[in-house]
Amino acid sequence: MTANVGMAPLRATLERRLRPVYVAAFLQNLALWVPIEKLFMTDIGFDNGSVAVMAAAYAAVVPLLEVPSGILADRWSRRGVVLLAQAALIVSVVVGGLSPNVGTYIVAALFLGVFFAMQSGTFESIAYDTVLEETGDSAMFERTIGRIRFVESAGLVVSALAGGLLAEVVPLRATYFITAPFIVAAGVALLGFREPRLHRDEEGQPLRQQVAATYRAFLERGALRPIVALLVLTALLLQAMLEFGPLWLVALGASAGLYGPQWAGLMAALGVGGLLGGRLVLNRPTMAVALGAAIVACCIVLTTSHMLGIVVVAQVVLVLVVVAVSIPVTGRLHDAVPSTIRAGVASGVGTLTWLTFLPFALAFGAVSDRSGVHDGGWILGVIAVLAIVLLGTTVRGFVRAPAGVSLEPAFAADQFRADDDPRWPGHWVDPPGPWEQLLGPVDTQAAVAEVRESITDLPSPQHDVMVARDVEGRAPADVRAELDLTPSEERDLLNQARGRVRDRLDDSLKERGA
Amino acid sequence: MTTDRPGRSGRDDLACKDFVELVTAYLDGTLPADVRSQVDEHLAGCDGCQNVLAQWRTIIDLAGQLTEDDVDNTDEITRDRLISTIRGLRRR
View 1 (cartoon, rainbow over the protein chains, first blue to last red):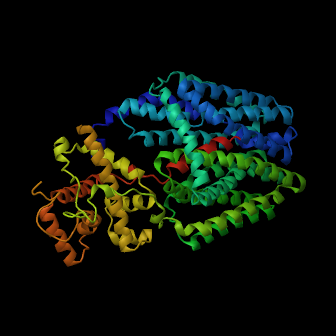
View 2: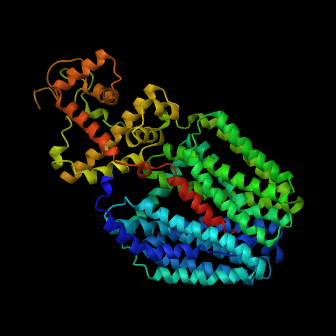
View 3: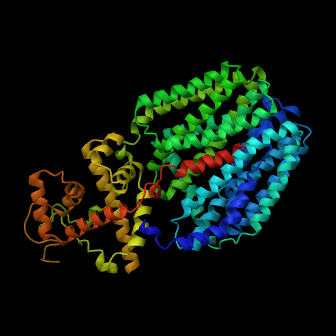
């Protein structure tokens, strides 16, 4: 690709600088106690009700601390905040491992909440600013953060499998203590990282704006509400499975060694579901019904089956399908809001999910404590049915909803003379000039980068059509068939998309030429 | 500018604001013959619209140098949310 010409040395420097971050991300995610946690908790006196109380306490702490820790990271040091987060994690695993009872373990869980809130988003900021400092733009951010995610996932899967195996040969609480040195090593690795210095005080202002815009988006955008509700419901199903899934294993008397593979299966389902969801064209009620039926079927298995293998398969399938569905739903959220508040709205959905999870966890715990985790599964069924009803009613708007997309025209109306202009109705007020006059021959590398960013930022219908036509070079008929568009829809969406990209490139060239 | 008319010269019935809605169809060759003739006639005398047409071609050429992964936006938010979820809950 032309944009990558000459990028190799920059990429090598960037990778070298980020190496301590990769190492820290891997070590920090080697949590050997995770797969057997529910088993250990049962040993020290937890029942389903107190597990839920702990989950609720955790869910309350995280949203409370997320924003303050973000401000701290912006105004003080991002690396420093990650180190503080790791300190909280060490406290959490040590207190957790030493815990003789429910009360002390809940304290450990609260420290875990502190860890999560403090490090959430901080690695992303570190990666973004480092990419910016080393390469001069953000073009390589996605690849960089992708590598960090991969390393984190590798740590998760390794610890899921290793933790289960380890628990077969050492006491359960030892898995907590064995984890601690890895966290210390992660902190040491991070100390070797030269922190970017790009963050400035003014970042506090966008944060306030983000909060205000998010608030307005939720309150004023009626069309957004069913999408947000759907995202919260799917996230609840997902979180419930990750949070309470191991309780089925406890109820069915699974051996410690099975907890690791079960957890690894859920983690793998997250990844595979994400891949499938990226390719899912969710715009027909029949598709929604099929996916909804799969979700409900899994919930029914979880409420009725006492066969361990089938229960685990149902959990894995449930996570996979829920994640796959949430991808296009999130895309719809992405489409429905302008880029200026996109991150804010996404954060708002995340916070709302945590706050909803709190009463959900308590209700699930109360029911499953009284009559068993299988009966608690019925709550999942109710949420699944609600999600499916919402999905069925909103799915028609997916992909084929250009009318719902607030896309500014590439050529604003005021660029043309009025229709009643006595001389030249509908003609240019100030005709576009040739780009070559702005900068001489168009600077291809910078222009490709601008086009890349512009296409990435397009709302979904326009984005999908332009990628298929202009990036992949596919035939119009193929694109129409895949996206279920009429010829005029496909043409109009493509014209809008090209116009938007042209507009941004034009602005960019004028800025650089000025 | 070739004449006193904003962005164009010559006479035709097509306005510039109409042309910009037809650029893609024009390049795809899907316009009816009579409309295409109108566009050709308009372009022959309109510098502004000629520039827009050239810019459309430049955009197509530049976009053709990208790959699907370069412009993938479908999972940007979802990926972050998923990772957040994993981070938050994997330890439970």
